[in-house]
Image (cartoon, rainbow, N blue to C red; front, side, top):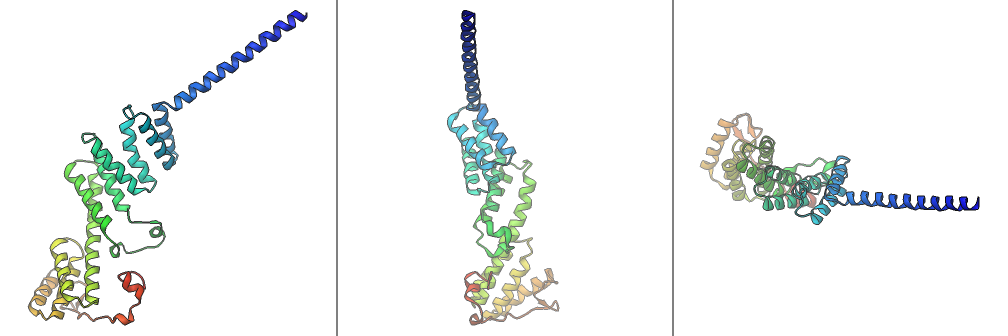
Length: 282
């Protein structure tokens, strides 16, 4: 009886050891699958689906670092552009797009990299504050807007048949109107500072470079007002004739016949905050 009991205990012990070994093997194989190239990529996809874009970026970067020549390396680089953008990290998204364009000039989805690069610049200067406070973007620095316009223009020139072209064109129209309005704001600032020649030149620049935008009428108005202040009556009359013919309902026209005279605003009555923010605040 004792011998039978001892044999049973020995067999039971061997069984436990076998289970432990099998469990260890299973855990090891799971870990191996997770650390495989496919495992990294699948994990990244789950994170993207669940909106964990920062974690997805880390996983995609780890995949590329560990398997730089693997089957998912190019796709990981492409998706990094997207996850950085969705994480509101527009600078990193731009860097990732430029890197992808440089490394894969013949990739069939290269138009996507150009498009997201334009989108990233489009949103670049809109910080957290802007999401809660409505601000006139034409009163801000337009560096990012100009960059975005150029990126979208590159997309249209290189890939005219891309599915992203329609949206890029619409955004370019918006950006062009924004840039034109910014030039009007600068011209009006020059008028307030009595820099009339600079204001007239700015108005002429708007008329020559921003045709088909709503700001052309404002540019002509600047020219009329500035030329009159400079005593250049003929130039002022010519600008007025163009304004009344093409924009008869422009708000600057007095009864549709003449531009109201610009009245200089005394800087003593303008707050310092208004001056340093170009009229944005104060």
